[in-house]
Length: 63
Image (tube, rainbow, N blue to C red; front, side):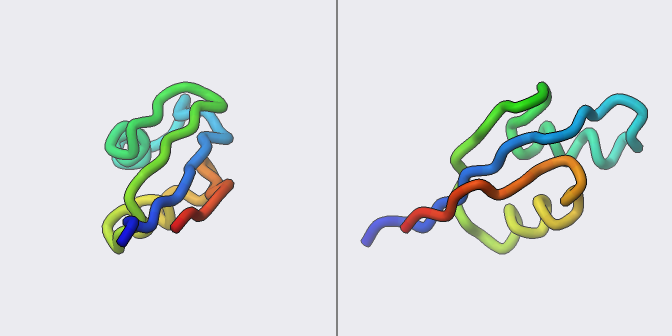
């Protein structure tokens, strides 16, 4: 069975944001505008995305 994944795109800059939000972006593997990452769809990843909804966008759900 294939694992579920989500494709996350960074839509905002981490400039002038709190350090914990910047660290969450780095934890997701993002750090520059318009970068995308395909990540495993787990509760921890979803929690990280939900912590910074103003900076990232889920553009696709696979699996």
